[in-house]
Image (cartoon, rainbow, N blue to C red; front, side, top):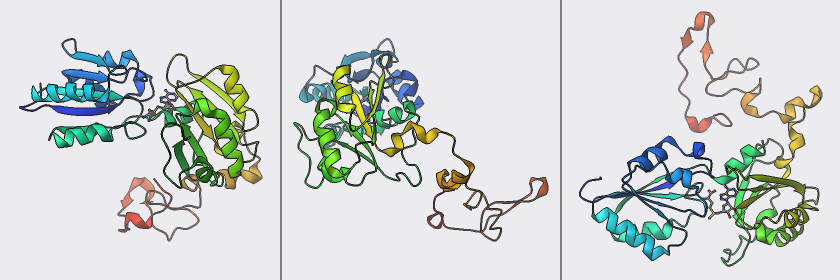
Length: 298
Ligand SMILES: C[S@@+](CC[C@H](N)C(=O)[O-])C[C@H]1O[C@@H](n2cnc3c(N)ncnc32)[C@H](O)[C@@H]1O
């Protein structure tokens, strides 16, 4: 049990696969006295990390006041509460309303990040969302539905950038999404992947382009828990071996021979900063360069 007053931990569960839960998230679930998990999107196998004496509640049938009452009553008894949410809690996690209530009750809380379904889907697609000369920007958004979009965040406006676009909570509005993306200027050949329940045993990937994806999704009968991943970065052919003459365009600066960064000096630009490793691994101290001056490197 926690001290005089307990504490709430919002824990990102990742997309579903328990192995994508962080070690910190797992430890906190194991230590919790009360576990409240979003059982519409978080599998029971993650709540199963709770210790045998913990109270475990699925929250899909609970309204917010009920969840908050349970949290507040538990922390007043000095208990540790693990509030487990899908993916990363900061993305469509509706944590703000929960945090406000905790703040107004002076309850201590912490957020433990998780792997968003967006990144799990990118991994399943074997895609890099930020490919040089293809897209250097990722937009995560949703189509307007019951929740209205703020002005200037209409899908059509966002899509006008033509970058990698990840659309949450919108697979039931596939036709509308496609219409908006085409109207924004994405060519109809733009690759699209719909990833259903990534990280779950029933995971499914539907690939297509803007001309056929809506029909494919309709046929698949997928109506929830899916992401729409749009953009040239989703093109599986980007992974095809390139002719030697095209190599430089396709390579990120980070690994380029000619690119110097804090940890590696370009052989073609020996006067620039970077680690100077002499024969026998002797290290020469690096000149002090503010990190803000280093671009492109990790
Ligand atoms: C309430 S939002 C939660 C998003 C979550 N916080 C995240 O970072 O992934 C629910 C939406 O996220 C997407 N989603 C969540 N889990 C998913 C999964 N395992 N596979 C595919 N999409 C998922 C779907 O678009 C779903 O409608």
